[in-house]
Length: 344
Image (cartoon, rainbow, N blue to C red; front, side, top):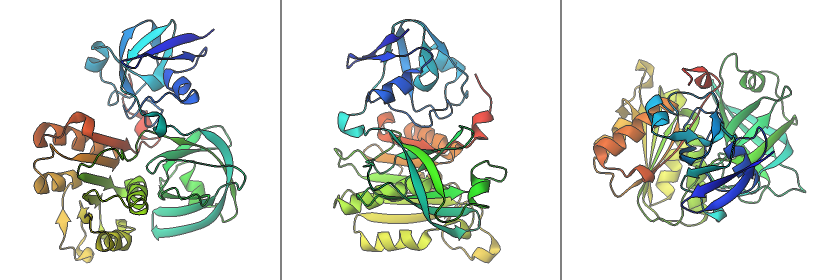
């Protein structure tokens, strides 16, 4: 049995199979609903219920709170229709949708620019095109069927290689393997591209590129894509880390800012150590943005990193700096630990 979902205001319609979520069906059929983690943890796929019946699965309260639920909002990634359904959601343009594919990939190189960060380069199959937008992510399919998501850190150039930045999560099923037994030439299985976090090229507004930790990865891809396409939009990269050694691509960021007249770079340390001899900015990275740019009403923000940073930035930029709510694009890195918080 399948049910039909109608999306307002576009009036697009698509079928949802038995036991399938609204988001999974939309991705399968190329319907551009916005989304992020697919796990009920980030809230990017939040939309408004209009009519019909459904079951809403377990999700994090930070992604969809009780007040929002009472107001009629749902998460597409956790909603399974039990009748035909009508929802209201903005949609991504057709050019924002690339086909999702499963494919093997081979580990080319593994580098450790910081003690808890690995930069992995993967070779993709020569006989299978893999198109994606800078900012999107892939999922690795592990032997037990579980999945782990990581953003591409390089712009797509048709070279059949992708770069990923992984932070070691001790006890993590996948990152323990990456920082332990993984070696060059290993074969992994992945699926993608996923996500609605990517540069909207139809805008010329100045940009704030906001990253914390390995949230730099998709931001790096966006900067490379802008450079490759000669896009001249003014942009400033704010990268927040704990200590200086956590700025694992500090030299790269400085080089980009020196070479690209439209880009500035502001590193911010939240917990500088005495040995860092740090004379730069300190504190919360999104607060540094607010100090420099108290009026964000004419800007767009692309934010990626820890969920607490992303949500604090979203709330404060909108409430205190006049940023339009629809000018904040985000990809919160939700770890398996993040997905085990208070659930609804």
